[in-house]
Image (tube, rainbow, N blue to C red):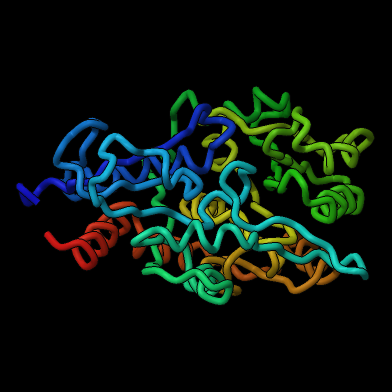
Length: 344
């Protein structure tokens, strides 16, 4: 590198809409912010001749950046940070003969991911998943960078937006979740949970809720309980207000999802309950930063314990977890990994 405060790296992304690609957009903005917090700059001009590495937010774009055709620049990408997005997800839902929900790792992805010089994953378990499926390249673990300041909403006009948007009484209690748009089993679970606990308000976010892509789960919400509020991806201000005021965050998905969403809940010290199938186990840590259940029946029991305040208070652990992995620390690790593989 020419100067110690510059990474000769260019971030390439094909994101057309920040709401459709809400996790990828968050990764892009927060990762750049994490470098800036460490007093590092990055290259912003796509035709800058200093570019030595290109960081692709979407691994499917591996051959799209071709301004320097013939130049041997390094290629970096991210895997498993955007599993709620159809454009960026790696795992897809499959079912065996007994209709058990399984994950499917596309064989073509192995070849594509192996073209990169460095892949970041949000957890060790995610890294192992790539290795077990035959991806052969350098893989490093990097937690999603979370911008804590956007959730500092005390006394701000943004703080109450969630109540206005959903037309619910100010300061009333609610829990929220994000559902995979093709996970019918998860949709069944949340509808059943809302039926059992009909005195609790549930806010359900489904990416692409009004689009064809979410048709597999939409049918479950055509006639649902009045305590169930279903929506597509929210604008940033409303989402920040939602997380800030929530009584709990729950995850009921059948596959690994929600790495960003979990860390955002931890940042706001929101009690978190999840199925073990829903997220990577070194982010979703039972009795440390969340309460984790192996099946839906035990989850229901745990949710009932939550309502009567019998679950352990994990806020101190959540605070410690996020302090050790704050946005500046994530940026520092990214810089260290860059230097480790590509030098100064």
